[in-house]
Image (cartoon, rainbow, N blue to C red):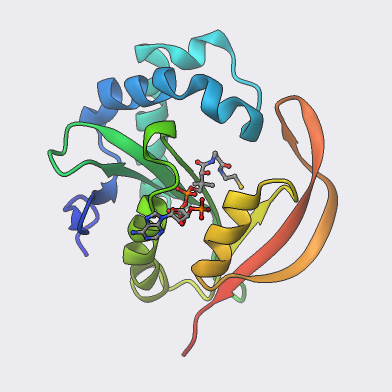
Length: 183
Ligand SMILES: CC(C)(COP(=O)(O)OP(=O)(O)OC[C@H]1O[C@@H](n2cnc3c(N)ncnc32)[C@H](O)[C@@H]1OP(=O)(O)O)[C@@H](O)C(=O)NCCC(=O)NCCS
């Protein structure tokens, strides 16, 4: 996979972010502000501005250049609308070869199998091209949708971390899961 060339799935185009995504990213953030607020860190009001999106994309480009993280957008088939996003973050090389996966989907696309479709198309690339051995993904116990998605993607529970991430202003417990490369 060429990182900037989209993978096409039946209902989506999936690729890493690029500088031209700022307006699309802003629309995704604004439209899904209330939907995502319970599951994400507190956001400053500046998060919902074009300048912030431009900066996010510049930071993403630098993260990819340094091999620290790979942020993706999931677009509809026209390529004009961001309908979901996910990031392979905190890449560690050497003996670990591991990263963390985080994701979200638009309220209007939730519950249709779209997140699964997009992520399952990219997982083989993560193991093969990014040479990951372990992809870790963690969710709050009450986030049933996230837990089910990870289970379907082949992630296995590895533990439980108390007060693990500050979500919506509260240090929340998380279930720790991983998917490990098969060969
Ligand atoms: C977590 C999140 C990405 C899961 O999204 P999702 O749309 O439920 O995930 P999937 O793509 O796996 O879709 C599964 C659902 O689609 C349904 N579905 C409908 N058509 C389908 C199809 N063709 N194929 C598969 N599933 C289909 C499934 O039945 C399931 O719905 P159900 O749980 O009501 O039974 C989403 O809830 C979200 O963005 N939440 C807010 C942010 C968040 O929590 N991020 C993660 C923090 S850990």
